[in-house]
Image (cartoon, rainbow, N blue to C red; front, side, top):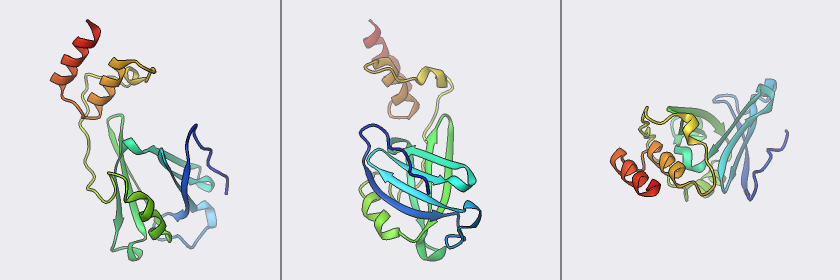
Length: 160
């Protein structure tokens, strides 16, 4: 299986074999892949199927185990980006290893909560420029961390 390239300053904390639910033991057709947890993101890779997901920790809203399926080896990751919530379901035999890493994350074993998105902000407005405080405000507003009133107040202070 191909290695997953690391980002700059990224540390690989864990790699584990994963599969699509119900077929963890069947590697035919590229249905098994790799889960990698780093200090910056969770990556799921299925090279045989052409699937690759890299989810930065700050976009993940939930990582839950399904205790009723395959004795808890099935998990679901939910994340929010660009007006949409996405959920992916995978299965692994490495639950204990994964739990040791993820239980320190704020999204671990929490209900998936969709974050509000305002139509006032376009995706193209969210390009991050280092030290651009207005862009940082836009991102915080888009993530639901601050209200529209707080956003407008802070933006006015920064642009005066």
